[in-house]
Image 1: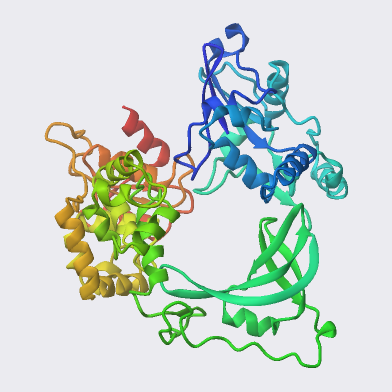
Image 2 (image 1 turned 120 degrees about the horizontal axis):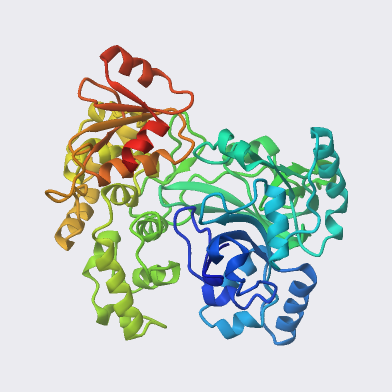
Length: 550
């Protein structure tokens, strides 16, 4: 949770979300009684600062909440973690105010440079002095031996705490040293989480069912006799693929040991073969899709079974959900239940049909009124102008994640250009590779996919990469080609590329004679060498930022 204070007053509360976009839940967070809503403006940076922390349910209060629900004939909440997240997104603040939410704060950032403390431990003391709830069990360690001892101590005492934890976080105390250490694209170099040894539980494997993903991958799910593990009731676990079933020699009716990978995702780690009955039989992996009964295939070199029928109902539903998801076209109001209703009523057969829906179509669905229908259509209309890389990702092409979608968008500039490219042309894009290129080429060669793409075109979905209007581009960037290599510490590569694109420049994936600048981060490799051979101007990350801010 990020809390923004302006003039000493809590102004905004925003969830982390996917790291770049979260949910504003200000009114709900104001109901957390342990949080100060006002701070004297003279306390810090004129009362303008950010505080971050974690919202949670204490164990005892969570258990009491579930007892109340059971007494009222309601289903109990599954676990404190998911329930806290769900509570914060509720629309009715009065309900949230009755929930026993708590928060620990662990980060302080004054908006004015030089106004705050110089170390993390001092920042926590300042937060405590301003009446923010900070964890009393924190400790400043003077050596790695002290760190290990602290971790071991709480590994044995974690169940004594009134809330759930799965490890301790170790941070470099000095903010100046944190700044020097920087961060990779995924995480800071000055902090690390030390997890505790995970707990295990024994239960019975009652069934194995297979689910079909949007790309046709068919994966097994273990259905278990419910068992309590780390404070939650576990009734399902992942089995990954057919090879994992064979490796474990897991069979229906087996006694199995389960644990939570990363303390979250349950998985089977061992079969208690000594408890296996005499009538036990090896599990037979299916040969047909469990949904459409099409014969399954296993591509060479892969572990996944694949349903090759792109019209399989499970794949169709999955593709529509993916198309509408936040990181793709971000269609507000198009959740899983609405997708199920649209398919059941045969109002859509693929995501291209979404744009042909009318208010009357949607309003006629179960639990959908006219206002909800209007909101959904407004969300669809808004999605038509998403950036090209989001559209490419939304198409659901196998092996094309967000990173590859961005690279392809930058390299080809339009969906039509990408659709007309050869495998060789796509594979030449640095970071894409032949396997991905073949998948993209195959997607656009399929007649069914071309039909869906045409539906998007007729609906007015933007197929071109956004270009700055005449006169709006920065003359230092307009028409210039930038290539980023190595690890950037002050921004992600995607953020850096967006800075270039928004100023009228181009962000390419490979170095050539047409490249104007190469921005070299840590551990830059062959691109940097090639740039030097070609005489391309090389910038450090700091020099690039100076150019941006000039």
